[in-house]
Image (tube, rainbow, N blue to C red):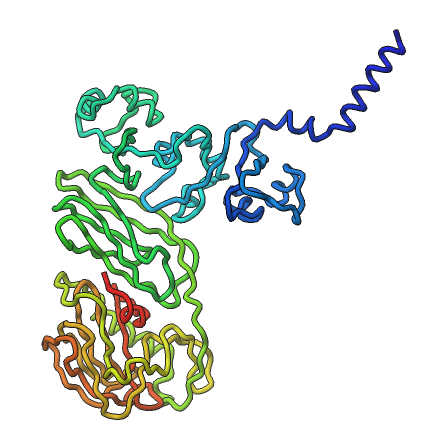
Length: 465
């Protein structure tokens, strides 16, 4: 009998020693991820918000291991969650609650799956991990809200659905948990739109789809005529104007030295029936990757950070007025004759040193080649709002093109327009010179958007808005 017991113990120990992988697999029961085309172990770990080393260890892999599409990987650290994981990128207008309702994943599971410690981490473009087994990832549906003093039963009748479906889909304990004005999700075939906004806000978008130092962004909100819309990007207020009655647009520039990282983007307002809406979500600010430049031979009296900032503030006071009239259409044309339109001596955004000093400055415009007295042309229709002599910019003209867009022409030898004049595309504005902080004749041309100097080059190749 003792021999039988010893033999049984020996068999158990032997089985445990020679089958460690089997024992581990039987205990995990956690979620898995199916490798997609283009995936690498590094991108999988990054997108699933897990440690690269832990991913390798859980799947008995090394840094040299090859993975092919269709391979199933175990995901460590989530033993109490099971299923196949999928990844979607967070769009603007979504929140933890709206993502939970759209994809039918409990909020607590989303927090655990994405290792969330703050709502700030659901910024635009970040990957969000979902349990997607047996589920349609991009679920269709629509958004509804309880009106004041409206019951869930009344709303269900209007939407032709079972009132319990409304409660269950939105993870509520009962109809007493439904709050008037709260955005609720209804499964269906209609497109759902931005989940954190009422149904009447059909679309919120911005172009380009990245925020970069020195670039211009165009924000577009599709909403009913009569909607009041406001917004902000960090400290910059967004001024929305109606394009067709249902499309509202705002243009805003980012400073060439804007802080990198996350910045809050807020859109808020009131629907025509008086219903308020508001949403804030973080977006990422990326580097413009500007170069460095040494400039010599400029008047020493113009080399001062304090004077530069003071003059910029003076010009900003003029450019910080987003008038409702929009005077231009399509691309801006070159502000110099066509034979010089592609001759530049300095570009926007370069970090500058003057007369051997430190790189305390940045170039706020685009410098065109030009001989003394050369023609300066209006690149688009507008209204002249300033002409005068400034220490840094020299003889300067500013034109208002509407919707917060202004252009500036510096270092002129002669003015050919005055304040209040209306100009058309191609009209003479002034003559090339070398006044102010200049080392030779050229045109320094600036584009201001939302009170900020932006890269003029994009206004020559793109149509805004």
